[in-house]
Each structure stands twice: as structure tokens, then as C-alpha cells.
Image (cartoon, rainbow, N blue to C red; front, side, top):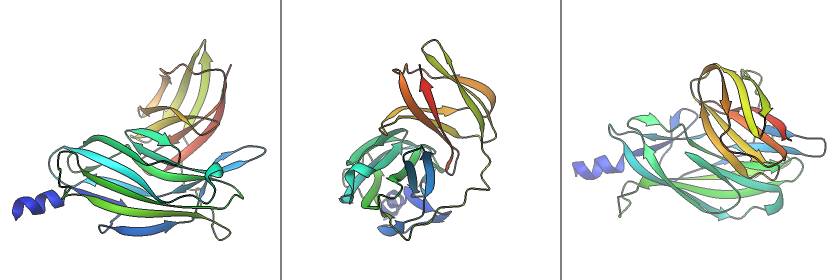
Amino acid sequence: MLATSAVAQSFVYYRGGQPLEDNATYTVSSYQIFLEEDDYVILSLESDLYLKNVTNRDVQATVTQTILEEPLDDENGYLNFCFYDCSTGNANRTKTGVLLADRFNEGFHVNFYAFEGKFNRISVRYEVYSTNDISRSDKKTVTVVYEYDETSIPQNNSSVVKPDIHVVQEGDQMKFIHAFISEACQLDVYSLSGQQVAHHCLPSGNGSFALPEHLAKGVYFYTIRDEIQTVFTQKFIVR
């Protein structure tokens, strides 16, 4: 009984600093502006879902994304599913990685992007379980309904401290010059179609980061996330 109980408590999902019961369901309808262009605005419906290993040992974990209800508008809304690396698009996903002992996983982040004025809704189930546990006795499940409609409201991000960052092109390499306060900043680079092309952790303080990926000529945008949320989004051009 003690062994079974210990296994069953390997993982906990959190939202708003509070642990969620297994099989919890909640709806996200507020949004942040993710990217603003002349002819369209992309909105991010943030799940604010966090994943924690509550044991005193590192655990190899499998995390899944399963679509329970297809989006109302598949062309104007897409999921973002991150567990160490990120995948965008409306598809079921499975990722595996190590959850460090007794801490939140900084690489776990899930949300839904919608286009302003294009109302949308999608229901998604997220599960986590120990990879080697065939019976999945320690599985934890949460369902998030992302709903963007006429009642949705923007979140106030006025208290967020923006990082000082700009992009410089040197030959065919892109360099990010930055000054961060946070200890856990993540850089994600996307094409205009929403496909993620790079994902990296950035060090705190003043410095520069040379993107190892060589991008084709075109327009891209990047986001910076701290431990809590996306704090900066900007477009850049590779010439």
C-alpha cells in the first residue's frame, strides 16, 4: 500500500499556485496579445498550467496532449504544446523527458493561439505519467477548454517587466542581445505560419545569444517567456 501510494503521488498539476485535483476541468477565455500586425492580431489563451514532480527523485515522465473537441475554426487557431521542446498545430502529441525531483518543470507550457475576431473553441486533455509505469497508476489528468468568443477579455499585463532585447544579423546568423532579470527565460522562434523553428533557454543578466539554427530569408517572430508567462513578442527579418 505504501509503494502504491507513493507512485500515485509522483506528479501534480498546478494552476494559479494551487494544486489541481486529478481529472480537473476548467475553461480559459481571457487572452493576451501575442503578435500584432497591420492586417491581423494573434491572441494567446494561456492555460496557466504548471507541472510538478512532488517526489524526492528525478522521474522519466511522458506527457500527452489529446484533442477531445476539435476547434471550431481549424485555420484560425492552433495549439502550442511544450515539454522541453515545443510543437504547434492542432494534433495529438506525446513527449518524454525527465522531471527533476521536487520542482516545477520550466519546459512545460501549453496554450492556444486564436486570431482576433475569429471566434474559436477547443477542448484538450493533458496527461502525465511515469514512462516506465506500464499500468500508469501514477497518471494525472487535466482538461482545458480554450474558448475565445464575444465575452472574452484581455488580461492586464501592465505589471510585467519587459526584457531589454534586440536582434542583430551577422552574416547568416541571428544574434539576440539581451538584458534579463529573470533566472529562467526561454526563447522561442516561429515562422509567420506559426511553426516553431527554435527553442532555447537564455541565461540571466546581460549578454548575447547566437541562434545555432540558420534560418531561411523571411519574416519571423520570437517570444520570451519567464517562469510565469510570455513577457515579450517581437517580429524580425532575416535578409
